[in-house]
Length: 203
Ligand code: GRF
Image 1: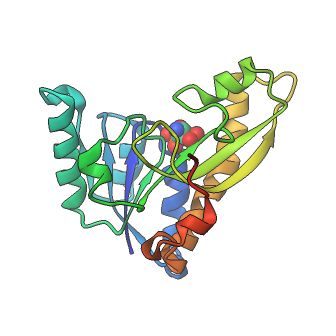
Image 2: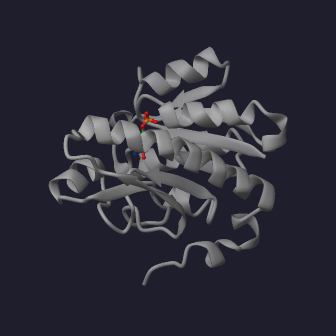
Image 3: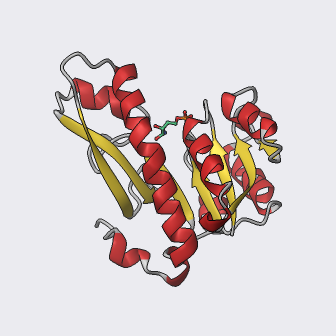
């Protein structure tokens, strides 16, 4: 199975996937890493691992739709079976969502439906949460609203900062992403529609 990983940042979650696919038994390889931003840590990690990379920057396109279409074409050029967003900080539009229905996985550093959006860790702290965590879900047209595939809880400590809490969450999140993607690759979760029994789509 061919994975294409979408990134925007340091790539620590992506790194965990790279480590996992090194084991043949995992059953997949990372065909490419695609970023919406140049010069990010995730691209350096991918290049170091000799994995093809591509950068598709919104600023290089006249509007949202042409960026979505360019992103879809770029991803398609690597012929993926599964897309994994690992710290990708953009919403995916119809040109991407419609091309790989049920086969785009994202990870979020909170227990959805709590704290969706781009500042989940900060919001959980501000909300006084005593327990938060991470979620692996399918991507749909909403913001962090797709069917949930897996979750793991992380306790919030009194002296936590956004950084200390996010660091602890990411340590758990890396394992959750690897385990979930591994099961999807080996069990064909979303390829035979079984996702419906895993994360009930919310109405
Ligand atoms: C992860 O916590 C992910 O859920 C969030 O951004 C973080 C990615 O970090 N969207 P990195 O770029 O993989 O280090």
